[in-house]
Length: 540
Image (cartoon, one colour):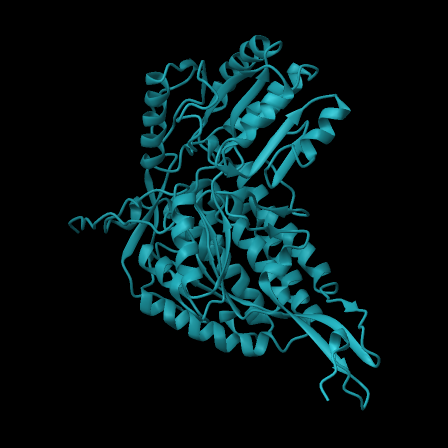
């Protein structure tokens, strides 16, 4: 059959994403899903062509796109996306499913989430491998991402027996004053390509035990992950005779994302992506007086005190700067080094990067530690940023080039010699580029850490107890994640995840992030025959 070239898709989701390379109708032998190396894809219920919309049944009336593997640019399989009309069907079905779901006791909902965790455990390796193939992160990271969903399911099961309000003292005799929490309804979730499983897991497991149903739009370049994950959740709902639309899916492009942001039937929209697109989402949601939960950009720094262990810093920075090929929102982008340690750490880090180059390869292969960028857009951003940094006087002491091999590979890059407030340093580039800055003190390092617009993650390496508490205190880091003697990335699910300023202010995952998925009511109950007024007011 002659190839049918379709137009490129523009994306509603953000810097963390890329325009989807659109795809052709091709012979079945060309798809990776039909090759023995990728046999695990069919274990996940995937086929050559897949419907990308689920609301209790699988369908889709949008464009047929092809998902490509960033490690080799080969087609994996095809997906028929949803339309705005398909989204409407998903929201209608999810609202109907909520009527059943909200009536279930929270511990009963927790039992369903427990079973989802078990179903994910059973598919841990193949789903993690799919993440590696479609997103591009190495297999251990892909499996680890699925494990995050498993872990948050475990957390949510316990939460289902602990979500509660407060009983407060009333000033009026014979009255009870209390706070009560109830589910919001249908929650919209828009996720990014770089964590195509975990971020949905953080949202869905918590929202489900809170009594909400969900409509999910995954990234357009990782639709197979969205479909495979939804099929796992579907299997649990079917087994328990529950409506599939408790966890609905609508793969699609910018039109679907925009419609979600504007739809008043979605009282909360959780969005993960760039600051620029997150701003637009927030304005659209706020215009209709909805709630938004934003997890946006990060320009994360490691500050190194004069008493830090250089070897420990180098080991931490290697993973923090080059892990996931620099495509984590918590990737370290700035290393702020005390001037007494600057030269020795730069020398050791350059050597560590050099030794690391032999571990670049296919994300599915054992021993690979560094995979590709997700797309050509990522490479374009990488090259433009390196060129801008050099034009501003920066010196590339390692990397800076595209790697000549199949797939979207670039060299992990270290740049020195730029001032702390150079425009390129203050800009988040979603690529493995680390700027090394020289400071005179921890106080100066803290001020540089805080001067960027984003406020996601930060770390201080020190043995000085006074600096530890300064860093944690009101004049310390202004980020949502503040670490000491560990990297900026690799957060655990037990704490709330998110950041301040242009990172959006949202919190997902653990701690009390559940409150974002519920509405709070203050309730006063009078169990007497009297009607006293508050503040001693007499109206008689």
